[in-house]
Length: 351
Image 1 (spheres, rainbow, N blue to C red):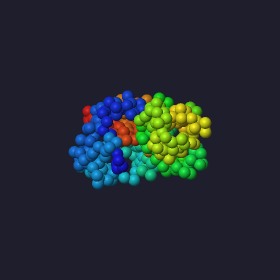
Image 2 (image 1 turned 90 degrees about the vertical axis):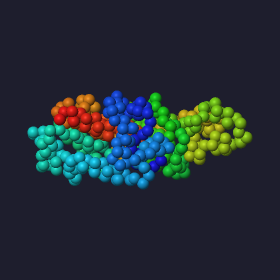
Image 3 (image 1 turned 180 degrees about the vertical axis):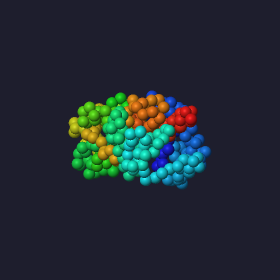
Image 4 (image 1 turned 45 degrees about the horizontal axis):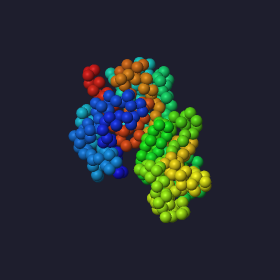
């Protein structure tokens, strides 16, 4: 689809299951769901449409900066003052907020939305983590999520297929499977099909320093159907059968040649099993700052159900600085807006 992906249009019951852990965000997402978000955007002058992947975008011609500026205008009209080029550097002895090392601000309520540990260029550099740690707050080191994963490709394979897409595939790791697309890069693999498996891959990498994903190169066909196509083909050459009868792309055929033995490749029964579940070893992930999002940050145990810090009264934390995870596709932004709405309602009741 391309464009600025704001949310996703799937039913909210499925939507909630995309999050890890899902229970933590359930109330926020139910109270201000994807339909509510789209209506609010429309009300402030940002009409949206649903793309072919069921992702939600601003209407054609509306740029991301225009969406941001519209939201900022709405806030300004409601009396919100936005001060730019400010760096929060901690709390003083009276628990007042300190900016730029010397300016103390006293507040009735403080809401932190400082982001995760990636995209330093935006100011979201994760330096707040150490400040929170010195206050005795429960924090977890950042880890990359929704990122490329490292694979030690055979030189012959990567020199030929770097930059090529793997379309209409499914990837599985542990107990999770995801259909979608991947891109073969010099580093390894990236794309929506593998981003969605970030929690499972991260867990395996943490335990074993490596993880195994299985690629289903023909997710719409069963092993039996593939074998039948093999048998019916008039071609004798295995590569020709894969190309014509099974309609496999050069990249998929290249993967099979690189990751199966000669005996397996020449045996149709063994080869169709590999087509449905080709094991690929992952040896790491892309650097933190190259990740689309991060996990880690402030432990969910550190906040109550209203996102208030248990150790600091009237201080709240929302967004990606909390330790939750979601795939790309509009889920990250939706959760941040939903948390914001829930907290706004809570603070309004307290006034």
